[in-house]
Image (cartoon, rainbow, N blue to C red; front, side, top):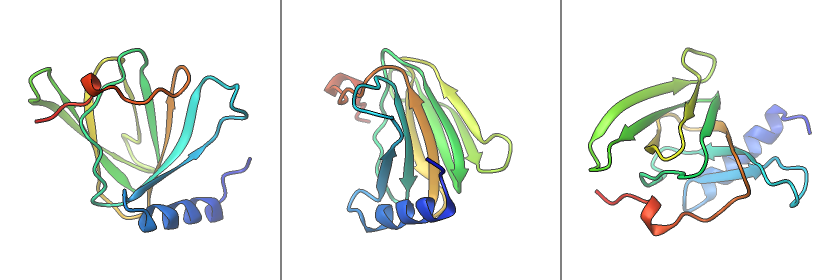
Length: 131
């Protein structure tokens, strides 16, 4: 699959129309593919709770727009914040397994590539932080 401007535009359009203000495009080759590779289109105001992935790291690469990735300690205190911008430094980040983090969309039409190990598993309550 070639990820064209038209595909990215359509994904952004779907995200803007979604009540969650985000939409993903699964890039796996089949349901037997146990990796997680996707495009995630985000619009400003989307609510992504502080969360962690206990068994896998997460790689995020910005294709369009910008986001703020914030990291937290176990008590919910922000420990670091990094703004990622497409075509700039930094434009990518690797989040270690078990790290509490949250993301804020800073520009309309933001699209990022995400990759994680293993098959998709819904988040467990203990992996979502309420502050």
